[in-house]
Image 1 (cartoon, helix red, strand yellow):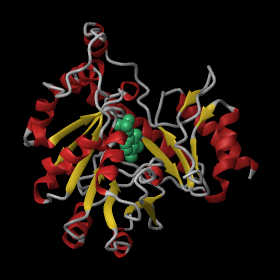
Image 2 (cartoon, helix red, strand yellow):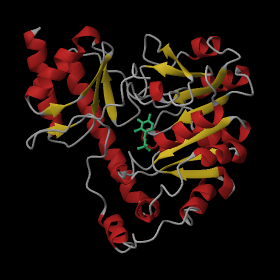
Image 3 (cartoon, helix red, strand yellow):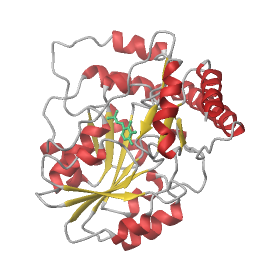
Length: 344
Ligand SMILES: *Cc1c(COP(=O)(O)O)cnc(C)c1O
């Protein structure tokens, strides 16, 4: 276990800089959300574990029963619960790579083996190779769409074909942390396919589009028995009323949040276009970040941006992920990227 490095958080930025390394929402919390959280300061009590009425509201959106919704302190904790509930030592968890940096360590505690399958040349999940990697020890397959860090989505037709061939006793988790940013009409959307596949669990979060990363609240939707197993291994009393109230207030404020999502998409396109004009390859993104497959220049590019207080995320020798942040950060990134090009 000591050989696996712990999840590393994005570095904080200097005062005059920008933290663009954790895909956080750059907007301040909405005033109505802050107000409702302030009014719910009864933290001498534990939260009600049933998380109502939030749970019922989410169930209604997905057209499922309340038991088919599982709310937890962040969708990452649900990933841990699902792997814990399904894996014994030597069992296998398959995921794409590069993908979410929390995936490789998920199976550590139960002794499961991480099986990382390289993305295709155009930065998509290689679903054929993932199917080929299935053995009788495979318990879980994680699909991340849009994929963090590349921003690419799994297409509906590719997903359908994948699901028709994956063994029925393998749990498939669709990690849709960036679902709200998706505009591609061909992308698979969990809500459209959930009913067809009892082995499928959707993961959503209030951390990204809803801007509640620091309050820790995410949820899963899917089969009741699978979610009961996840609940059984979850840490009791881990939820807070504050996060529930903030999530409910955020659902109620969705029109304003949608405006912000649209604004982030506009900034993302400005950033992508600006970088492409400098000659950089920028993977088309359906999320709130962009991906530059810079290969062995990734660390040098990251260092050049850091000199100007721009904190971005390098992924080994694969590339660099830049979160879409404050509008002022964009010309600064372009200028720093231009200096990087000039120095090559
Ligand atoms: C950010 C992120 C999460 C979110 O996790 P929370 O625990 O809900 O904050 C989950 N999956 C992916 C792929 C992410 O990028």
